View 1 (cartoon, rainbow, N blue to C red):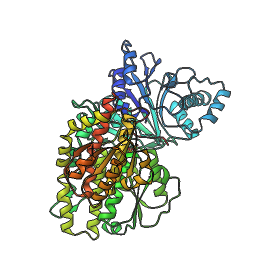
View 2 (cartoon, rainbow, N blue to C red):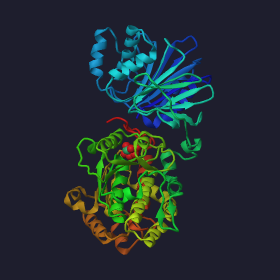
View 3 (cartoon, helix red, strand yellow):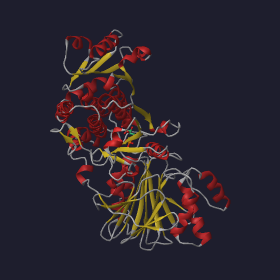
View 4 (cartoon, rainbow, N blue to C red):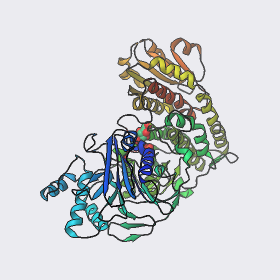
Length: 612
Ligand code: F6R
């Protein structure tokens, strides 16, 4: 949510900033801007509403000799989408330029104070207050820029990831974070800063992750980190494992399509080194729980948001089935504020692709304050959630750039399956049962491949239903969360209203919506409740609904009552979400493409929601 970049070095500053911003565009795409500090130490700001490509066009003829700069891609919070509200923002004298990700909550109080002192503001943003506050402190207290930044940040309430440059002290970029991620990339006589590593992978793999309430001052050769008492801190350098290919489209028309098709490989990566078939067991490296502690777990609370919350719901069914441990699933945003009852042997499991979602992070912190262990299931290595958890499991899905989550979801479900089997094997699950399950799990990537081969068929179905105004998605048991996920995918990228329900709930209300214009997507693969789902299909058909069914075989009943079917390979009911969600991802995808929409950057959304 909002992307920040910064560069200092001998390279082409303008191009490096634009290039890095492009790779962060999935974090926000309302407007973008850069500030360049040239060899005469003058700062120029260029900003533009819309995508980075708009800004790039504007900058085409700018022949910059800059020696450093900062940039920003925005997801609007305070103030509409205008050139004025785009970042970077200047102080009164155009001597300090600042980009910000996050929200300054006490901006009104600070603004009044600064206005009384004569500061003039050009935007409606909270960010502009911060740059004027730094200017004010710098000028009145005659202290260094670093100290002024620290003083200002100590007056600010809220969240921030910031980067600033100044013609007063023109050989450095100052950055700080509290709640919004920042990473410093260390090159050869050049330094980078960014909201996440995707931005800087082509330039360097050596990075330093900032923690909350830390400030870093970078020049071409050095980077020095401080806490907000201006005490120096020594930070470890980490190596980024992802390569450039992982963040490029690789010939696919969109990132989302590439990520849907990457799912079989991503699943294999999640299982690699963890599935021990000969012993019917699972091995995890980083749970950081002893076997005794694990056996003592009396309840697992899972919190997450959006798609990750859907994976959590599948996880609830899985852990209760395989490990017989009671599970409660809560939206992270609800959990953190409802003073949840937490007992001694509870553990909290947080699920987050980005590892930066603020609600999930705060739920984690609340649970830690209450004294229980927190485990994280995240995709982004070194993300804030990954670092703050007591232990966890990485998804190994590779970077997910498309804003609508796909491969992260299936890997979250794979990880939940492995976790449930791991917990089950520590308790009552037999070796044979473990082996039976893992044997089937190993076959899932190939089964997903079989579904992907039907992309053209699903595209034809999408064409047929592209004009529908509403959709219903219905599934039962393990496939109820899949129905929710299918509906969310369609809403996000095609802007068609869609609802997911447990199939049997339909008759308690949603059935009133059904008529000849309502497509209803049924998850009707085999399982103990299969016959009941078939009854639900009949109920919809009796009311002239149009039925798209995901099935394992086309029985007489199904061919009689359905309008379109996608036949997917059969698997255990517990694993079926992994196979069944794929046609729903493709259906949403092709409907959005038929409507000519930008599926990688749907309107109003951003990857990694770092505000409340
Ligand atoms: C849906 C989607 C969002 C995220 C949610 C949580 O396609 O991408 O609903 O799932 O914002 O994000 P993470 O998993 O990064 O915490």
